[in-house]
Image (cartoon, rainbow, N blue to C red; front, top):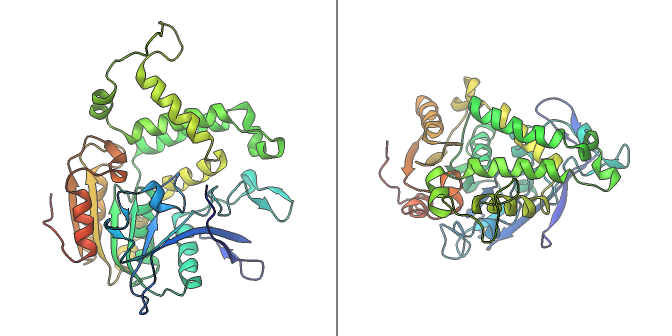
Length: 359
């Protein structure tokens, strides 16, 4: 990871008060900015990243963020922060617990989407920004934007939620549990104390990543890319024979080099508990924010039904919302790519050129 600014936003006398009770301090946050803040401080756009992202949005979301992109860094001042609980510069379970001098491990408190947003809002205050022209997020990023709109009514003018959910399905919870169990049952996990031993639960984290990655793509996409092709020179057996197996193995090996198993546990778990519309006051709290919801027809992780639920609840509360379904063969990962029409919709919304709402 290249060097990005870090700042301590919460400290001992001023800790982060967690939504589930208790406090956390210190909280250091790594963040990146792009572009220039206008004299009127009215051109700020916040990018909220997904489960395994980081602060460097222009690197992992180059189709969306950059010069001439929908989130145009020649026009907007763009801010993206690594999530609380992450492992890319922001305080998380592998950070040092000041009370013990060693990594927090599983003693790190459970966190919520609301806690992520509290940290984001403190970062904006640190940067001297009172209101956002827009907040844009895909997957877990979209959930943060939704939570933010209710926690700070009027602070976000436009909210773009792509391939997001307001309530995970039973199947989603089950899949995430399997991924976490792979990590927790790896002997090298050591009850979460693996940092003390200088090891990593590579096997468990690899399996978690392979399972997760399969849910981010689609069957038609995998069929078109790999089919039943086998590797040159491979032989039948229990090794890596098919090209799809080789692809997943590559995804796993690169992932364990950049992401932490404890962060995977904590960030995936907070997704399970996110259910903001269970509180009748949640949608009613949202004021002066316009929403754009985008889903993809091949996304079976957070498909269109998830966006439909969000739209229904927002409309019931009188919130301004438009919803679009985009045709794509790339599944959930479509939000990181450029299926036809997708990026144009976001650009139009950010520039007040909204399109026709699709059912």
